[in-house]
Length: 544
Image (cartoon, rainbow, N blue to C red; front, top):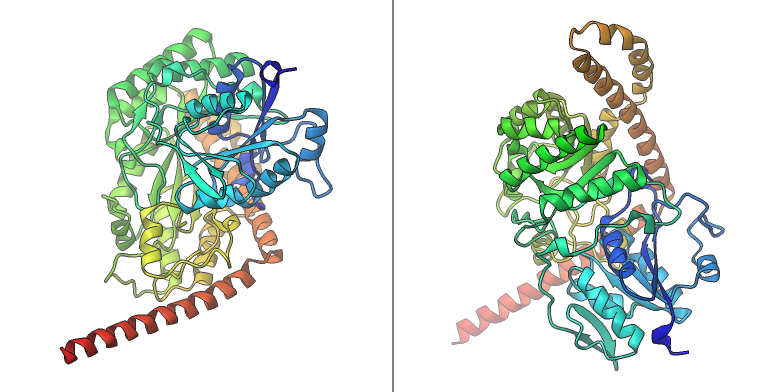
């Protein structure tokens, strides 16, 4: 029978994290939106069966191997995939991605990979590690054309936005323009995700970001879907999956003020019309706190949690990141969010490399104390503190590479690129070990065991808190927020304990020692080379 008439199976896989980390717990309750969107497009094509496997949310009757990982050998036995897509949105999952690519490649399966990781030199690395095609850029249009070529057995040269190997040479086709008309794309189908349990449903609205942060991979002019599409995504998840909790994944909520107000008004109207309440989390800029009309609209829309990138309470680090506000301004704006009734999740980066000529003379514990003090003064409800990650293609990576400060990936692999490990030589007087221990010290003061006792006290205080307020809704909210924060702080303590326990049994300390030695040797060679070059230049100048 002609292959073009058979039904083929496309399996989209989000590779698992290399080990337990601070994101592991939430990952078990949600999924990445990108793989769902790509798989949804394939599901609209004729003669294709489609499924998504998220290895970080793999719980309901999924076959496992003898070390607890998803068992792809069994999956291939019960439901053979003809083409496998691999999500490379997180550099820390790349070793697992390559492992899966080799597994499927050895079984004669066509492998496709895409995501933010695959740029520049990483494209060649991917094609040399079991990947047949790398999708460069957004995948929805590319995957449709590429799968058609694969089914027909024709040459892929005319498919824009891909790279592949031919006769030992990398062929990279013409660049594909970014998608601007999102309404023509099908709504994400979460029922394609197998073996998972989703509590928090991701929602996409805006792609791209014009802030151009040095450390971020999300670039380009912001492109927004229509407000109606956002409402449709939420409504379909509510109707099909009884979803109540949503996370609008974009960094720029509030970017288009008028459209944001319209979205909030439609969300409030929709919830009233269907007689239900939604719990929505957004990522938003800190200075949107000054817009009281926007905050009121957000609150009515069911937006309860705002995620804010504070990054640092240290002026010198904020300037290196090109942030516009100082610590005191940030605290004042955070208080406006609290006053409007929002929970605030704060995101921080510790030990950000400073600009040339700038130095911090105070010791590491004073830096830690500044973070602690800021978090307490701002009354931030939950936090995450990470180290700077030199992600592929960012200006930060280029700056550190030019300064010969990056640890070699031959010593420290991609699996450590998750923000929990030092990946470069920090500014003096910091050491890599101090950087890593600092983020633990900040978070262990915040996420505490004693919060377990506060949970019980809050339960006993429930009636008194409720009836001490004339406004029942206000009383409930105040009690719930306190109880919720104590619960999350105790859960965070458990997460930190699990992470530190796994770290102690891992190999990173040995890898870091080898990386520091390697960097010292290459740095010394670089200095000697520069000195020889300078001596030759001077000698030539004197001779002339």
